[in-house]
Image (cartoon, rainbow, N blue to C red; front, top):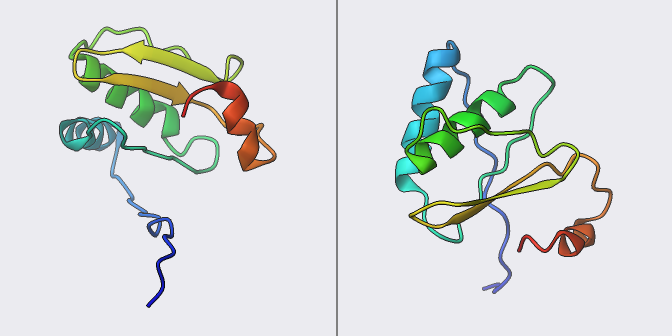
Length: 105
């Protein structure tokens, strides 16, 4: 028996339209707990930004929340009532150890 832990297998979900993406974000927001991580990967136009913004708005319980892209800042922190959230854009990271420099762990 091995005591090593491994990352869960990626989940691939194909959604019919933007409305389905918004519903998925709301469902995810309902089950997230402090310490959870959601990682999105996909090509340009895959819906990562749409899902991220909808998820953050659902966590904030504010459909009008401004959600800037962390593309240039790399980390956009939020202090929501349920728990704090760090929205990260890691596309420029070349080594996993670089995340320590962001202070987002």
